[in-house]
Image (cartoon, rainbow, N blue to C red; front, side):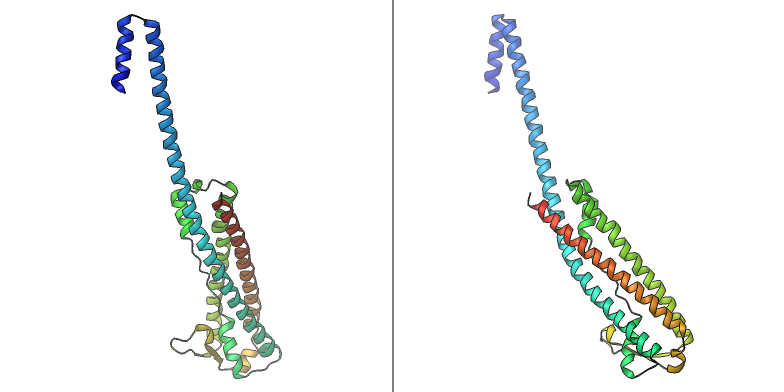
Length: 246
């Protein structure tokens, strides 16, 4: 093909037909330019296809993370309700009605417990490392960032507050009052026991009673934030499914 083109070029030069030669040369340049543009277009198409595949892979990973996080959040909500139940039982029976029997020991143990949040964020970390611009849909990109940077951060903050408050309360109760703890090796934490050694003194304590009322508020707030995460995650899964179908 190249020899054929060269032959035509030499024939035009030898014939002295400059105008036809210039037209031919212009056409040859145009073909080269068109070839370059086509090559660039093909390269851009290949890069776009690779980026699209990357974004789909990340969205699939994000979807798997969200499904796991929804299940974990629901389990943690159930645990929070169990804590609230123990708080209510102790507040009502022990402090308000001034009653005590061994059945309350499990509630003394569980009332000052809280579930730590655990979630998978590998998909989001992968997205950040690859560049959030891989997600071409701006609304979807914004939804992903809001969930992982805002909703999860709010939940993490309430958990940190709970940990700090629980440690302070534990120091307070152990300093002023004594408990006999019981938990068998390998037994779930929520099946432990905490028996007050001075029931009458503990019943007169406004410190522990006040702590439990505020502790319940923290647990209610934690449930609210987890429910928000679940709702947001479910909506985000729907958005991801729509994007993957495109």
